Length: 429
Ligand code: ACO
Image (cartoon, rainbow, N blue to C red; front, top):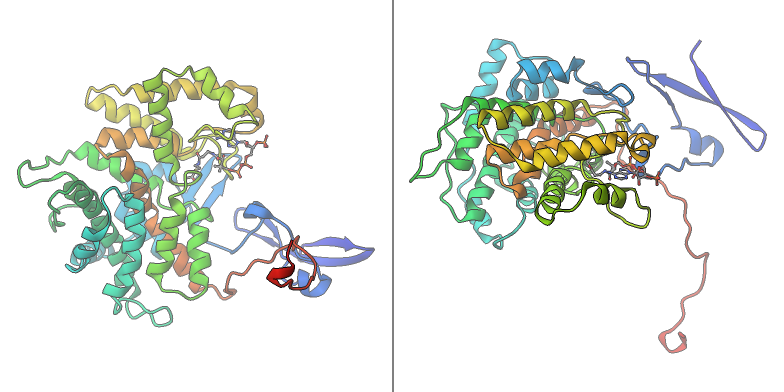
């Protein structure tokens, strides 16, 4: 017999269907709740709300598990490339050699940016944040490439999705070059996805960039770890905005904007700023921990805590190992890594952090890895955005093909004034 939940309101009993996911997760289906009872549910921040059924990413926050299309992220970080992961997320299976070759060909074919877009770039005021530039430029792509995709008529979805994956990488590197006033470096067909990005970022007509395979590998892993994370803030934004049937580019641009916030993807920049502040001003770590615990102080320990993970974020474990590896390769020490490790040591044994289940998340060590690659701090969240792009695209694709798809439109509990009359200006006190 199908499982049901019973809800009793004012002595009247209602049966609500229970849905079960493939990993045993349960949800009470409340789609008919309002029409049958007159009640809605109240869940600010959607902590208990399943907004969709999805077959893309599985997370178990209690056990620290993350899988893309069923495959553990640890295996993917060890053996796969970011391009394979993009394919896996968007299409649901790992590519065969032929599919991979075709994917690479499309990524190369579509890597250039319309020359008129350069004019756009030049018009941004100096000092504009690269995330600001990226969200605007992604939205602008719809104007420059209207032929690529129409919401209801996917002429060639594969080409559209991959061209976005390719172009966003070029846009990101261009935004960095232009923000510095440097010559833009074009993508090259002979380089892999990650090597191409590094080359566009760091090559110059006067000093060629030497591509280091260990850095390329590290970037692959960095992007794989960020590629999807089920219904997080920016992905939810992509789905909500997309639910109005807006085009792919505008939905993704909303995701970029949502990611920018320091409580979400912007945390990688905020962590490095926090660690730099501690380092440069010699702030005792106990003071930082006390600030984070104080209810009178809005400060939070950046890079700690997660809505879903109530244990160590599996991505943070890999990122921490990578920080050690990449710094030792260059025989370099980063005082911020040492501070981060000591902060973690204090925090994970402190009763406040233990009681609140606060552990390092992906952003705690990721900035140290990016710094070691030479990526400037204000580009950190852009790096996250490039990594998350395949996830956003696959979630958007799944949502527009969902037979239960409806425009996203939450309800509210109204707490304002009851009806009252308009008062003319002369009678207002
Ligand atoms: N430092 C100190 N206290 C914290 C922290 C933190 N980093 N995170 C949560 N808490 C405390 C809150 O004060 C609250 O305490 P209380 O119950 O005693 O009032 C409790 O833990 C629960 O916090 P919420 O804000 O309700 O948790 P939520 O799930 O809504 O927020 C979030 C999750 C936003 C990630 C939060 O932990 C946070 O602000 N962390 C710091 C920013 C950060 O690292 N963000 C990146 C997240 S990963 C990502 O998006 C890529």
